Length: 153
Length: 107
Image (tube, rainbow over all chains, first blue to last red; front, side, top):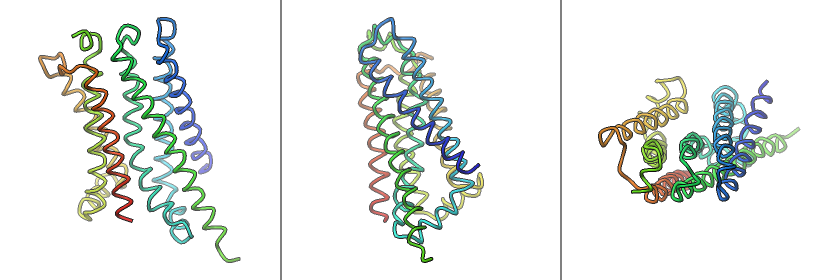
């Protein structure tokens, strides 16, 4: 169950990232024909991020403590002290950005040049922070792995 | 005029709220990590400091966005979108740099 929650968290995070990159490219070529798709993508990106956040939050609160103890006793304590601590907090900003994305795409991006500039900016921030979250998650997993490998048999 | 006329008031109000809450998030981390009293209080409220932290950012985000939208006789803030975009960018980047900087220095 613990592994499923964690895999679901990563899957939803990647799905949000893919939807956001697709949205970014679509907005650069915004026209009447793809406006509905842009809005749909922004809602998908927000929904996937909320799911990733809830799954990750559940795992953090319910299951992370054991992994944290393993990491802190291993050779990579920074996997918790820096990467987990920062990830836990910048994902809140990421959640706000993803929630804001459907609000920003609700405007007429075809007629309004300035609104069209706002959306790629927000989408780029979502993509960069989502990539950072994925990278941080990988280092946290490695922190557990190197700690377990370093344990004497 | 054309810029503000064609975007919803919520785009401006929640954009401003987002920029503020991104910075608030970073300062809340510093308060929590440097004061045992704040950390204990956050732990007590919901049973986990992180859940309280999330609530203390999401609630102001919703509240500020709603309040900003009600300003100017319900028309929302008079701000052109070309001024909002750098504000959102600055808020998020500043919040991120404060957060990363704090943990680099704290460690």
